[in-house]
Length: 240
Image 1: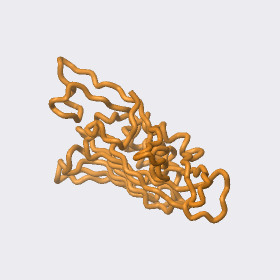
Image 2 (image 1 turned 60 degrees about the vertical axis):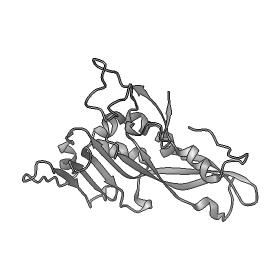
Image 3 (image 1 turned 90 degrees about the vertical axis):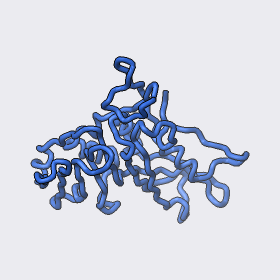
Image 4 (image 1 turned 180 degrees about the horizontal axis):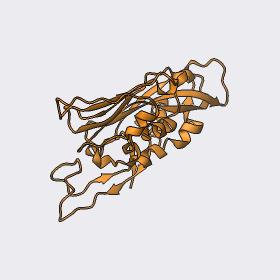
């Protein structure tokens, strides 16, 4: 994770501490060249000499401990006291656009009574959607397929459950990857620049305990690009 920043001689704000604490750090790899060129399957600038990428599986791994115990961010209270507030991440939304059509696992929908459909009249617009009311944890919308946007829409998810009915991010990703294995097998270089995700952070406890402190009840929503096309953008920390 990135270190705390000091700007103009001032200590970092509570918001900056939170962002430093909750921005995932992922290991990167170099995309190899073939015959002196980058793979045509990758999203990249045409004149790029090389391209770094990370595995989505490594990205989700960063949320494993946070999903179990919370991510601890230092909060300075108005009186000058400091506490460590812990937040649990929940997947709020995600869209993954790829450079070619990838099929989801049909058995996923069949196992959970989900409805799949496609429009045969338009070969460029195919979607699969599912919903289930038998289990609150599946009361959400998912669509995978092809849209008229850069790349093919492989997967999208927008959480509609109340905060009390959600499961932590790592558990949700594992659940969704049973039907969409690309969630854990794709690389950032496979994804279009319009791919993104958002994470909701809810406070669970703080140390030492403080009674009735408004600053400790705040929730946050962070947004992250997850495509190699945005190299140099500080929405994810990368480790070389």
